Image (tube, rainbow over all chains, first blue to last red; front, side, top):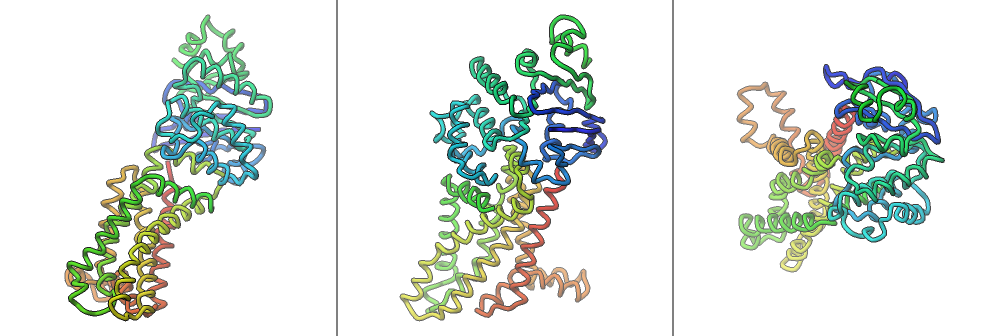
Length: 233
Length: 239
């Protein structure tokens, strides 16, 4: 589904991504881990076509993101870091706009479904500005899901949610994983064995570990936190 | 593309800011005409004084409208959502331009009471006034395209605002004696001719007389095309 090959990216002299390769297939939920500044967000921005890579390639369903950007982008659902949203809009207005731009036919049912899945019923007509952090994040996830994408990329989807909401979002991700390839970046390590069947650790733009959460657990020490510290230090 | 234009327009009208801008625009252009243009005491049924003030109001009004165009998207991070949609970049840029222009056109059209007033008081040449309105609308598009480009350079609205005013001002006055005398000591005649040809006022004045010259029209259209092109180039080279 998603194939990232020898990706590299420079910001001036600074190398943000160094020769990064991995694959994610339908049914996979890949946990994307790494310390702050490791290059997680930059990688995600390149995969979604927001930034251009300096080397390597990204292809989604064999569509290269730079050669066929429109086709490739139509397969992606993306929640960027920090959940940017148009604050004056209401969730419903915003979702309607996304549907119209994505040229989804009969989109009212799509909207109804995501609003139900993410429990946005009570706030659907309130300006996004007035919503709590948790609701904002759910609106962000809703706009990423609305067109039923094959590849879902979520940058810290559970950040700022309360334990109950975290549980709900994880459940949702698990349900979605049957028909999609999913990448979630997170710094909450406990989340990884719970929702992911694959994990990738990067540091300073380089791949440090790729495997299943159980392999990660087996490789070193006891807790996931310890392993994480060991791998990136 | 229609959806993008609709969203931009909604973003304008969803907050009171748009209505305040429009009100200020109408009040400023009217009061300049009535007080400084001696609209009534001139005793002539025409809108030439009104339209002669219009470029000067545009210099401040349009950068205020365009300043948030891209810089707000950058500041909020929504630019990332916008540019990862399966839509070509040029469509996004042009949609923003058209929506902002439409908003300015809406403000210009709301000055219609002054048109009714001259018709009530005398019998003006309505064909000329129609041409003047059309000229103002086309010129407004040029200021909009320029303002949007400067908004794409920065995520700070104030910087975008000030830069747009400055550059709009230079393009407006470049044909006036004030400017031409100043540069005539530095540049040869050909360069001065070239610079004066880039003046909004020169082209707007010919349009204002009611005669649409192809030259004036082409000037404004290519001006808009150029600044929109620069905006697309700027956004293609984002990092």
